[in-house]
Image (tube, rainbow, N blue to C red):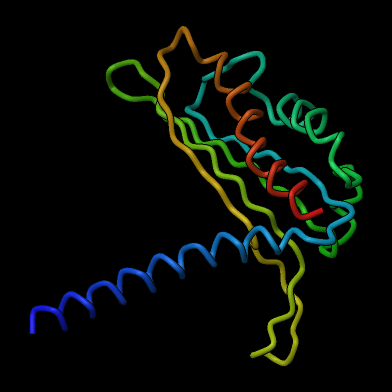
Length: 165
C-alpha cells in the first residue's frame, strides 16, 4: 500500500515537472522564425516622480541598442502603429512609493505576436507568447538605477530569442 502511494506521488510530481519544462520550451519556440519586431515601453509611476533616465523613450533606445546584434530588424514605433500584424516586445515598468520612503517596482516583459484562434474559426488576434517578470525595491537615492535594471532584464529575452533564431 505504501509503495503504491509513493509511486502515485512520484508520477504526479514527475508529470508536473515535465509540464513546467515544456511550458518554457513552448514559449521559447514561439520566438522561432521572427525576423522583425518592435519594442514598446510603458512606465507607471507615482505622480510627481521625475528621474532623468526613467522615460519610455530613453529606456526604449537603450533596449534597441542592446538588441542590435540579434538576427532581427527592430521596427520603429510608427511602423507598429500602422498595423497589428507586427510582433513586439512590451516592457512594462510599475513603480510604487512605499510609506517608508522606498520604491518597490515590477518589470514585466511580454512578447506579443499575431496568432490564429483555431477554436474560433481561425480569427487572428494578438497574444503574449513569451513572458518574464521581476520585482525589486530601491531607496530614493537609487531611483536612477531602475532604468539600467529594466534594460538588463531584456537580456533574458535576447538570450532566448538568439537561441532559437
